[in-house]
Length: 141
Image 1 (cartoon, rainbow, N blue to C red):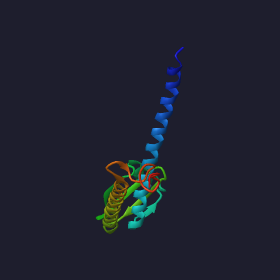
Image 2: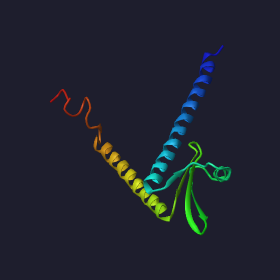
Image 3: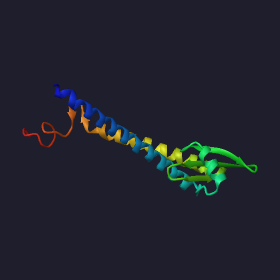
């Protein structure tokens, strides 16, 4: 009997499960990041309580800001189906949310650029600058 085939099946299943759990964590992190931006922008949280509110909440696309018009007033709504929460804001809150999103994107880009520059500064043409054969640990110095 081939033990390699017996071992490969469970390992593959384990790797797939680990991969899916990593992606699930990323999605929840993105949603919580978006929700914190909405709260910081001034969106109010509501829990649908009546049957009509529950029906409207069920029709909404989850984790996406939607533009709605109600009684001639423009509203923006975001549905978090996992927490059963609705974020509601007006035009001013939505503009603040977009501004905060741009600021966060710029900050993340700058952080990535700084990390790339830091990593590049630790290497020279022969490899890592600080290592056993180069730098202060060189036994020939």
